[in-house]
Length: 323
Image 1 (cartoon, one colour):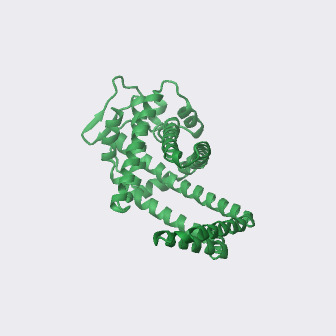
Image 2 (image 1 turned 60 degrees about the horizontal axis):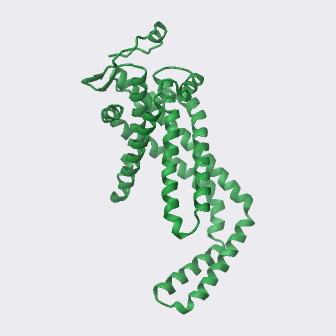
Image 3 (image 1 turned 180 degrees about the vertical axis):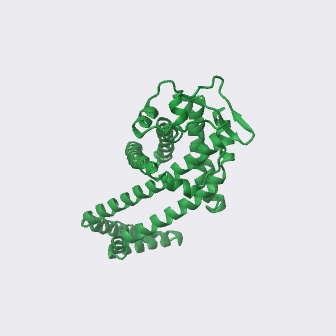
């Protein structure tokens, strides 16, 4: 039922995807511009280097000879590629400091970009909660500004933890699979296992953090209580939540991959929609577990079998259902 209710809430809040799109485009363009401005002075030296140009020309000659059937010169062009590649690696080894600085700058830009997009996700969460609880159509920008402090603190904690987790898992899986299963015959096996384990790792992360946002937005708790609440598994059907996230991730990957058929145009809508539906599931899961009534559309209210009565403190704190 969670999956069904999530889809209904998503359709009811579909207009938020357009707001997410506009917000993410602004943040994305700004991030790309800053990245180019910061990295271009370093990258231009490598692009214009003799070693790289020689390597590119050698590869071009090799491909040209291969396509034209000039097999007699393949050995010579292969040797030229190896020589040019060696010189390029030698160039890189002399610029380790610059490469490390480039990597650091890129990491900082990605971190800041994720922090800003995280603020957009927090705003989306507030809009979805307002619609589920009160049927209120809140304004995106106004909501973003009014909840900026809470969103900033949340993402200041969540984004670094999430990024470190993603990088660590990706690096570990890449190292284990592509080095242990080396060779062309194992390449497809490595890619399959890498993708499978990455999807499982993402679903696991979402399972253990899915209550964080709802606890802040709907439960109106502080950061410490929200973190303790989301990582506590007491009374939570962890396996059910994990399996739902797994299905959602697979659907999202399939839909976004299919956007290639539209030359990426569909991705403009499918990517922001992916974040919206994941947040919808988090709130449906939270409402169901906390036994709170909520709207899935303007005519349908989901009521728990045993509705939990709000305490006096929750009522005056603004936790009323509004339904």
